[in-house]
Image (cartoon, rainbow, N blue to C red; front, side):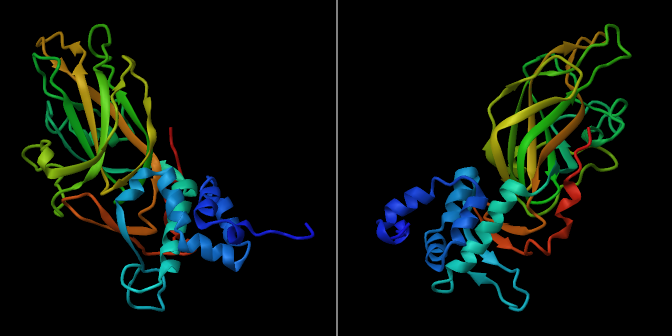
Length: 319
């Protein structure tokens, strides 16, 4: 204590980075930045906020550039690649992203149902029914198939183009009006996230026929492992191996393997009452410009943390 030592100044740069990279709590990194001007400069110059973002969420590697639009006193964007020495802007964007990844409120993130691989009875059994509150009497049903191995696909649009998704809920239908009250579940489920290949939005359905799933309409940047589905009628919660930063706002649910055969026509069906995606909405603070062919993007900070008063709108997790 009589001769305090600043290890950031005494040690070699690589060793200091290795020590500070052990911090896993964004609050600790903020405290480090507040110790002294030299420590703050060290954190900014070595991109430690970005490194921690990458550590917590590997999808951040798809962010190839950042732009800070939050300073309303300046009418032009500030790009870290255009202005020499502008690491302060880079630091501000990634420090706010770090806050978003760890402390923005959690809530349900699906805004709309886009399409399904098949629909049995239109418009009574469309995919939009899986988002209805009165889910006991509203459900989606696939067309019947003689081969139970034929998979089905449901596609949803999230509330913004930038959401951190941690778990997905799926509730299969129990047909209480049929003998034995069968459950039309799948054997397994798999999830993918990505973006549209075309900037044009997809109509949920026309007045004449539903829109069927076409994989060419989307680019998937993340695909989960398969999760077995229980043959139960309750809500089944699937926790992803890690939270996934969905850049593009599109969620795909693949229902793999049909289980139950209908007693009337002898065909296999999958029916779903409810679908929910739980995560954090980052799109009220950030905007993204996606490169359609690669899935990489430019991240723009459009609001500061004090300006984004509406981010709490998704905090209500209703059961």
